[in-house]
Image 1 (tube, rainbow, N blue to C red):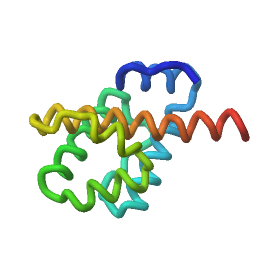
Image 2 (image 1 turned 120 degrees about the horizontal axis):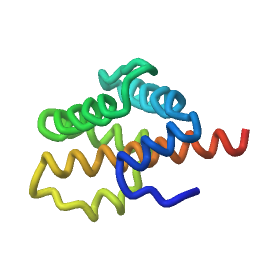
Image 3 (image 1 turned 90 degrees about the vertical axis):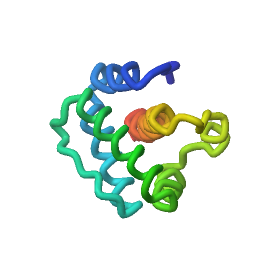
Image 4 (image 1 turned 30 degrees about the horizontal axis):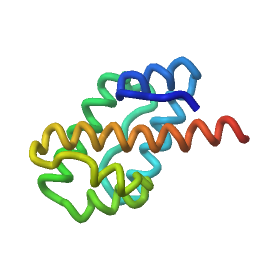
Length: 116
């Protein structure tokens, strides 16, 4: 699996491998499992997905921290990676967490595709 450094890299890679729809599906599925209202169309533009995910994570951190933690658990974002983030700026933190969420979801999609 290739090294992905940013949300844009990840989204471009998912488009390149024609797995973007699978990524959106996996995101929707895990957010539903966490009982969080985040349901985007598979046809959503990558830039809109990025913004909507960032906004949702920001709102969860600000207003419903327990649901935020539950979401991270369900998606299986590594706790060590979360602990390494600087939490002094919530807006920046939510962007970094959105990247970690997408990165983990991409791993799930990539492995399912590779080993089906």
